[in-house]
Length: 111
Length: 112
Image 1: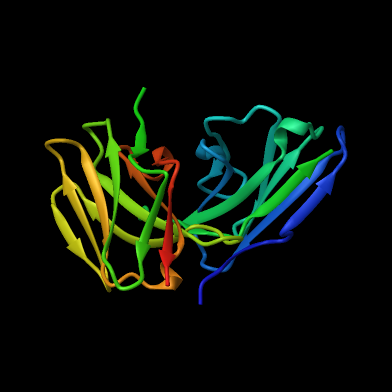
Image 2: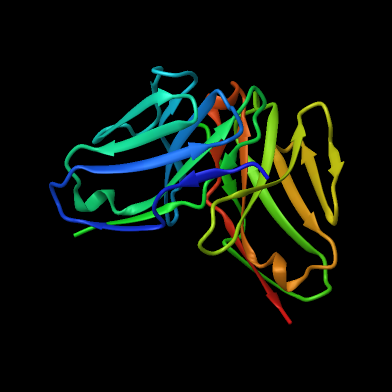
């Protein structure tokens, strides 16, 4: 069974901390994505990557950065966490078609 | 701007009945549509998709209908079961995988 695995289900961090969210996929997919999901706003794209060491900004990249050193791993970094970054974060991957496989999500709370 | 929206935020149906979840889209250039199911505490799960050259596609207990004239998409679930309780949302794209727009979701509650 193919999988996208997010390392943490729940995280609580303090304002100003540097936060790393990790995502690993075992499907050899080229494309990986980070979304945040907020009530009433749906899924919003933060960053995506279509190859190792390649990254593209999504709709809401401010306050975030990403790293893709290996094909299977895509990391989301909050350089200095703020309370407005409290959210559910979802990682997804896909090959050339459009059907995304999502991870289970990381619910991040910044206090 | 372009948007994908859902008509009903919450839908309650009796177990065994059929469910219909609707989605309106505004981008006439959209050429691919997807329905996802998200159960509590889990990530979205692909249910069914349809391309703009089709108006109907069937899966196991699910059917997606596409009406391009009125830019409307619907998901029909036959014989709704308690395990169908989840948030359902549609997604559309006109420019490949980078430009997928997701709707905000409809919560389906199945009454036993």
